[in-house]
Amino acid sequence: MINSFELKNFGPIQQFACPRASHINIIIGGNGTGKTIFLKALYTAMRTIEDYKRGNEPRSASAILSEKLYWTFEVDKIGDLVQKGADGPLSLQLTFKGNSFSYEFGKDTTRTINYLINQVSPRESNSIFLPPKEIFSLQPLILQSREQNKTFGFDDTYLDLARALRQAKTRGGDYAEFYQSRKSLKDIISGHIEYDKSSQNWQFKKGNQKFSIGVTSEGIKKISIIDTLLENRYLDTDSIIFIDEIEGALHPTAISKFLDIVVMLAEKGIQFFMASHSYFVIKKLFLIAQKNYDISISIFSASEKKWNTGNLKEGLPDNPIIDESIRLYQEEVRLALE
Image 1 (tube, rainbow, N blue to C red):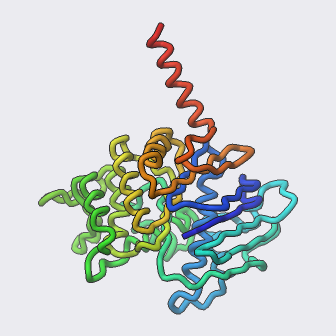
Image 2 (image 1 turned 180 degrees about the vertical axis):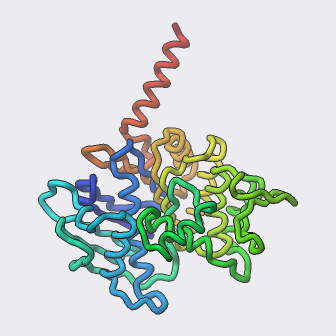
Image 3 (image 1 turned 90 degrees about the vertical axis):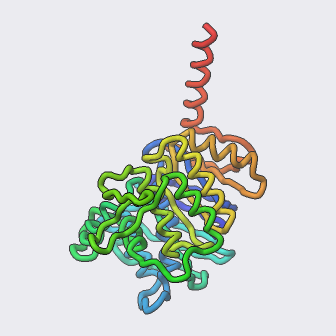
């Protein structure tokens, strides 16, 4: 898994280092603090590592990364990602299974990264990024927009996910490690989503009934994405999953159950990086950390000026989201006592 990382001058993130990442990592912070940029920064690095020398891929790691940054952040030139007014270049360093991957470039960089060091061995497992919106109903549009029209609109996180969902089921069924996780996912939504070849559309199947993807709830579709990627074996026990706004479209009960499944998958080896601005998500993970001594949950607290790192076993960190939730609770108690 990703063991450590450091970002400098990456968009709104002036400097953020984590010397020891966990199997479950949660990022909290308000709008505009850089949570999504942080997730995409790590994701583009991992996808570069995974695409390099895979199959018949002829491009260098530098060329792969340049294209990945361009299409993931959809900028005129990748130098636009450098923090405005920064004295130095943008840089990212990470260690994966103890090996180093790093790069840097300045604000005048167009599409070519000249400085990149990759000591990570070629990798067969996949990382995936789950954006806030589900994509089952958007999959044909995403593929057409990017593969045929080659235009901005759906960034590479959407394209990679659309392609991953397109991957056919493999013989042999589920990985044994994921049997219980997939059963629990189906229990949350009381069914599963499957691709109907005759209509060439996704459908939600509940018992003997089938429903159009267009009338299926956003929450069901969001949970079904992970279930589908486990089913077609795109994800394995060495995968990394990045989730932006994990609470989106899910009611509190579903969030709680979904996070329990995240723990189950993390115990089997999958690493998670998740962004949230929900106190409910943080509180649920805090309780999991207090009860489960085998799982370490790192928390990254983002603000406009500084990023901090901690561990939920040690308690909740200082953060405006948590502070406001506590303030509202205290106000409620005060009103009840009046």
